[in-house]
Length: 421
Image (cartoon, rainbow, N blue to C red; front, side, top):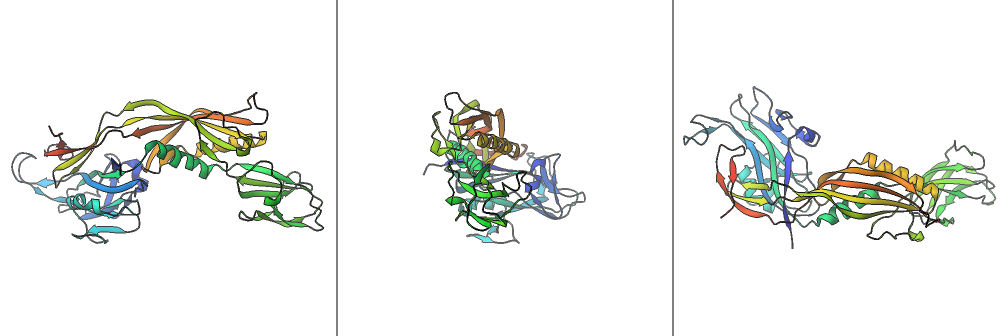
């Protein structure tokens, strides 16, 4: 199996506050973007839980590192050759968002009492189950001196992914979000039925609908003859599997009925600009997809196993914007206007897109707003077009490499890395 090694970062910045659960005695210090005990005086311990990440392409959790600053007493300055006594510490459990797990020496067991050391988690995280595709960290900061606290800057997790990045961000994320979100409204006028009594139910599947809508719900129903201002909504219920609409009160069988329904337009990706088959409209088409402003990031990523004295460097990826043309095609002008409103509503309510395979968020940028138009070459179709970008998408093309670790306690996270000669 071809996999890519990636690094998942659990930060403690102000923007992350809503995703972190803080217990008694611990706080997120947004000024320095670190997790620390509350004080001084500082309590003996405090527990926090990170967000739970859910990358659907995970095949294995591989490595674990806490970037943490501890406090010492006695001895000379760090690296001075005189023993010092560490008076702060930290412990860790892993969570899948449902249960918390402690490594007991042979297996990961459900446990909400005990904590592992960083080295124990790093050594054994490769056996933590990936069945749920979820991972979070429960952190306990401790101190034996009420005047000092440990400060946790971030947690790094090395993981293996079988992600195909273009497929993930476009097909599995962007297209899926559009399919789940776009819900335009269309209308159908049902003529007088002459059924001999008040109409209390309508079989919308049995009525001739020129356009092949995928109807998922009903918005409202009106007596078109008696209520042309559409003031009284008669809708009661709709059963999608049967297409039966129930209304109340009943409408005289000599009156017309207006049904406003919600439909799900197909969303497709194509490289052809000739996607104009009448049988497939209304449709939303993504095409002309390409990189814009691509560049290689300057800084690689890394995860260190402090106990083993080894590390893995993930090579700097290519980062850039994916520029995409979005077209909306309908066979009715009114449908085009409503689809236009729905697409504009989508981008107003979705300033970003979450990659499902990586569980990373990328912002969306509108380059050209959606504009409806009718090509002179096609009197039967109405089209609209928007141009947008998915910002700062990363592409990992180079393989990660193993690197040795050189201990140097004067550095920020306690280590510097050097590649093997």
